[in-house]
Image 1: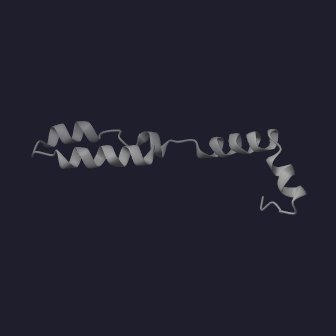
Image 2: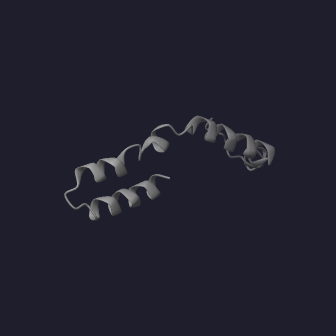
Amino acid sequence: MVLERSIEMGEIFQSYRNNNESLRHRLTGMWEPVWNYDFESEVSEAIKVMERDSHFAAAETQGIRSCM
């Protein structure tokens, strides 16, 4: 998501032609999805998947200690 927004921002600035209103309109809200992203929920879901698929149990069997 961040990479996509950064590329889009670069394209917007590259095409900037002294039209402040157009630029302002295109930039408004551009980063809201990044700022409001629920990272904790994403990590929690990833941990649930790893537990479900026994990735943690496999690591413990191999003598790898969890840092959590």
